[in-house]
Length: 253
Image 1 (cartoon, rainbow, N blue to C red):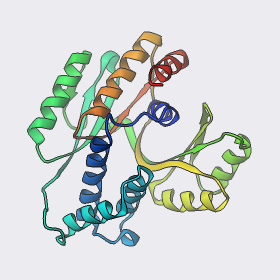
Image 2: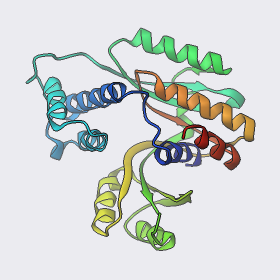
Image 3: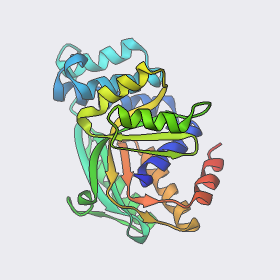
Image 4: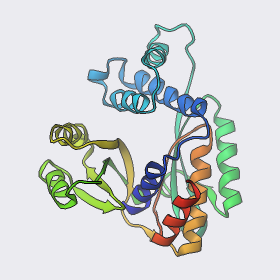
């Protein structure tokens, strides 16, 4: 779990988001559209859409814009668009594995950007299945533990159905079976805990621990991948040295 969650912690703690609100809203809109097409426009019957709507609201997307994107996908809007959902696998430096989720209207553009990014880092795109076997799909919740008894919070999460918990720099990472994600989220909120985020994530079964310089290199690659217009999520099995995490986090301040 460390590779993905520590990166998530950096982005949350430093408020690191896409370079512009316009880019962020474009990514959120694509997820709303694809989620609606996949499971319908009723969030009460579509878990993926519920998560997408919550993320959009957390990023201050206006409700009118959220509804417009859902309507595009369900045939009620005027400007429907075709968006392709794809998963790509690749290797970074030192054999680190990456899985990249994309939403795009132009697959050729997406593949070209990913291939170039990996190549510049000393890595490469891989065939389907080359990396994904090293990961498993889980629910992931992040909670801020500031001014909270970390031990009690962790025990509450386990009691409520979490499979695993990990505390890293004032962030509690809660891993669950996908089927338990929304119920666990709701029960934690009922107990008064404030969630930073929740999502379906790919968690590495084992991690590759990197030294300081290699950690910085992979952290930079993660940042570049996340900033690509068509990229929605990036997962890696890299695990980072704490000194490198702190240095990189400070550079984002």
